[in-house]
Length: 126
Length: 130
Image (cartoon, rainbow over all chains, first blue to last red; front, side):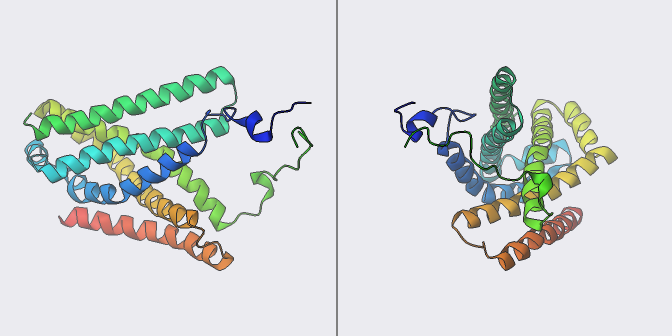
């Protein structure tokens, strides 16, 4: 018989060790991604299949560069949270879970930063 | 009230027990499209990195993304993006406690499926025209 309350017993025991914070970040990033995704489809998607010069010219526009950098970075934060949610749902071994949670988070941060850097380099003149 | 009835609580029936309903399908598809979009995101970053590296490397990656397999992945990702976009907006609306009436659940479940295809077709037409 424990004298701890139900809440006291479970704090920190969730599979990701965090609770409503992750949920909240997911909502905030999804709201940010609504306009950013539309900007991406409008400004960047048409460049796929275009020429190198067209791509470089497009990112000379501060609007295109800034919205694309924000879209990439916030997408990867959103993706990191989403993958974490999926991983904690389906992976049960403690070691595998930790390895997967850490590696997906680091990959998301790394690839997100790389994408933002690529756009910044073109915007500042490759 | 600690430790009362621990481990003796009823469990929710698992997914295989339920009759399939549109809202469970859209929920699952929202998760699948979200995970699938990771591939699209990585490909787009690769494409951007190539563009910032050199004209030659850009042509290589740009060529891969516009090969038949590349285009299949790009157009598939476009649909996934629209579906996840619509599903996400619906999630936010439902977070405000709206749209839980059965009629509304069924209507919006089918609506986002139809709209995701309509928006995909419309954006492909815009991309082809412009």
